[in-house]
View 1 (tube, rainbow, N blue to C red):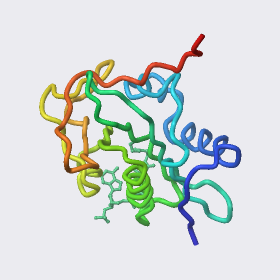
View 2 (cartoon, protein in one colour):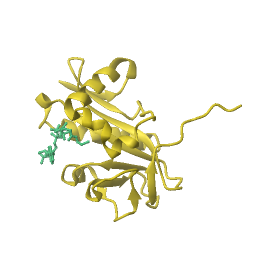
View 3 (tube, rainbow, N blue to C red):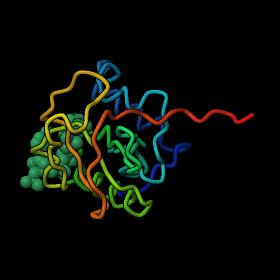
Length: 170
Ligand SMILES: CC(C)(COP(=O)(O)OP(=O)(O)OC[C@H]1O[C@@H](n2cnc3c(N)ncnc32)[C@H](O)[C@@H]1OP(=O)(O)O)[C@@H](O)C(=O)NCCC(=O)NCCS
């Protein structure tokens, strides 16, 4: 029985990082997508982990991002990884689906992802229009996908970037 739940960083973070390391290897940190994550913090209440007998066997993290100067509350989805031995059972789709459900509950309005359109289209992602959303580095435009989580908003445009880190107010 596999249980999908929100990330408890104290319990799951080390195992999630280990899963990402075995899945993506060291090149992972060189990717453009990483520029949206480095120095930022994911949202544990939206992140989802898959547990089998208490062990992390899958994970999907969610990060706040800003797009251009738009006020639309946007998140960046990923990395998504499922342990080799647990693939092909629908876990990857379940993790993303449940993470997006949590994002909607938390009033996030748009989800952005870099990934395979074939894999992510059934989850409601569509390719962004050419040049509409840019990433902070080289990226195959066909793999930049988005999904509106709130039907009332207009799609933003501009450069996606991590939010500025919060500074101490003096
Ligand atoms: C991609 C990954 C998360 C898929 O996990 P999974 O649990 O095996 O996926 P699911 O079982 O939910 O697959 C759902 C559907 O997608 C299909 N699918 C699986 N991997 C796919 C891929 N790499 N490309 C396209 N389709 C894929 C499945 O056949 C299935 O189709 P179906 O619903 O018609 O049967 C997993 O293979 C993985 O961790 N890969 C390495 C990391 C990676 O590439 N992450 C994604 C980019 S962030």
